[in-house]
Image (tube, rainbow, N blue to C red; front, side):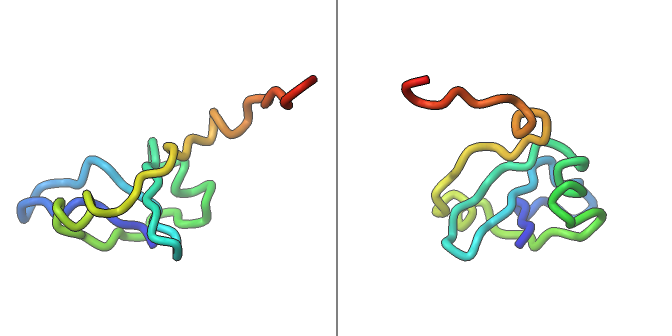
Length: 75
């Protein structure tokens, strides 16, 4: 699910996260990343910041980083 910290009415959410079924949150760096994951212009579920803070945090999901080569161990 896409989630964001609940903000004041009329304010715009500045950080979006993908929360997996295992309960880990992964920060999305921009709207292109949401599109790459198939969420496009989907809305996010607002969570109170204390609840969002309870979820373990994984690495940020960034399309540019995902396209970088990864060195294999031992080679």
